[in-house]
Length: 399
Image (cartoon, rainbow, N blue to C red):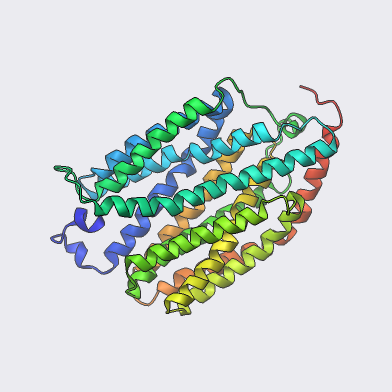
């Protein structure tokens, strides 16, 4: 799309950095929008309920995605991508808040009931993340098949077909949400929020949000870097598709294990620091690999680590929050989007300069390494909060 909209007559198109910059910036534009609006969607869902926000987000995503498919210029495509991301920002945090409402219903019960509720909530968070990964795996395959149909869309470009297919799926999802979710369920205020009153941040909360942003920055740099590294090595789109598919399958399997009944949420927090360290190593060695099998192994290492980090941090943010869950998870989503945006943009810039492609992976590895050090205190930071929540739950909670 960049090549078509820029046109070969554009003098900037002769610059070899042109494509790399715009691939990075277009990715960043999509994930930057939630930085500004994700917490607003979450707050709105706290006030009026989860179902209407999910429906509006999905329908808005469908409309703006269809409009992006017909973009007549790069500027309009950028605007479309920002709007795509803005409406998409309503979906995941609101869905996670709905789960926190329905699966965490033991806030006022005894400790055993709370632990069971924690287990259910943690597994449900993992399932949402796995569903997203499954979509990331199936979506490109559907898009590739749709693009090969070569449908006659009149004045619309051939690249519009995958966009329009995804837009239609979003409409179907909106209808499913409207009819499947209860419309009369109002969000509950967590016991911790009622007892901590106007406290802005719970102990460890800022660290969790910062870690989520850094992990997302590393993943954003990796995704853009993987695409551009594939171009450097002339491996072709089939190899790139297989690497992204492998990434999804590995993340899916790892999350299925971490969020299974075999692993307690209280024990899973011990996995965050090792996962950061392994991810840093995988990113650091990526510039040195050249064969397809080596790249596939490095992709699997990074994917496995990311599959552990992201949902665990989201779960713990929801667990220790002192705010309404929708707003808190919206803030967490904004932090993730900020990280993705920065990582994608920086990777696109570095790859745009000859000889600096490897620097994108090394910079991401350094940031993830620092996050591994910062996450060493995480088990001690969140454990007192959890213990406090268990103690509070056994007493009457003032409204």
